[in-house]
Length: 490
View 1 (cartoon, rainbow, N blue to C red):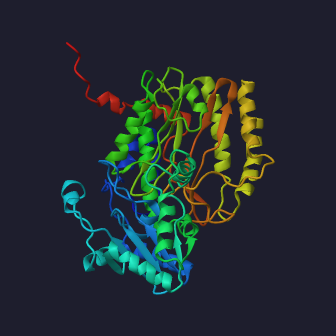
View 2: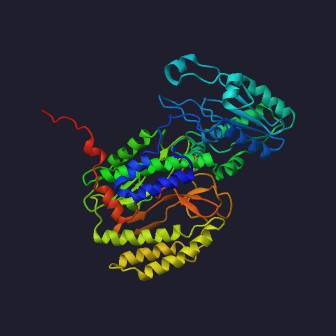
View 3: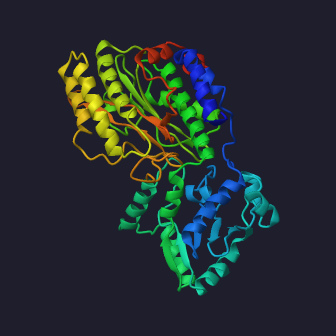
């Protein structure tokens, strides 16, 4: 793992001096250490501090959070984001109780399943002193003790805070399982309530006097500002995402299918210990670039196509989100350069206007002034490209801009911004799109920005964006050149 912001910036400077397009992969990959696919990534004290913050917010109340269930097949177990954020525990059907009055927490665990341990998971946490020491949670007991403990809290008239949203696992953001739960409940041939709704009803039946309140906003507020350790993990996830994109750039050539480039990135993801993807691969060639979230990934790259590549890993329960554009054959045409470069300059005008403690709207309006000057001085040979550039500016000109992009953290579309102005410790992406509608073409770059007290750090800035750097990287041999080939049929 690259240690500290200064260490990463120094590494990026060295990479730049050695020419990113040629040696960036070697330079960056030397700082990446393979991690266990799933495991606790923070010390117990960091999880304890998060629970303490919840205690402060709930006062005399009690917070209760369910862990996820077993998987429905031979799939690795990934804990849901909120439970993991507060515990680091990856046991199925665990329940956490955080008591605001006693300032202590209790973890309730299912009985040990020796058959499952032997065949799939390995040793489980066992209630008692060892688990308490390992997790930093004051009391770790059997799950069958949860009922009496809940009833005692209800008898005392305590408020119960619990998540209302459907749980978020890998390859998802909060809106995704929420929409699924809503659609399932509304389906006349299904009608099931969410697991969270069922849990609330069960608690209410066991302790009718309790008042149930939503815990989600409290945890969202905590997650909005990333801790130094979280920032380092997200930096690692971004390094891996960037390396995956760069491998796809090197490998791309006409005749390949979009999913072959996905395979390049996934090799890098697993090589560096990722659990899996943070979201489905958005790899679009030619006219598919027009669709913001195109993900069929089956089209063939044609000579003369541009490729838009947006993909990142789920790494140690944190994600990233980076997008780049490159020519399928490794060389931009003169017209592609004109289209791409004007978009890039407008994108950079927006990025360089970003400051801490400033609202998205004020940043956007400052950027508009820069963009208008860029367009006025740009040498256009095609009115369509000029119209597209002006339409891009119109996204911000005279509009009230509430956000420049979306936050990123444990989910690729993470919790809401902390305030009306950008705050140090927030991480978000900008991903404005420029389109040429009658040609069915879209252009979209995306970078991971960390807000600091004095400005921002572009954590994905090592991934080439300039035409010359992209072409230089694409001139290298790709993974497919070295891969084994099936023997010819006899």
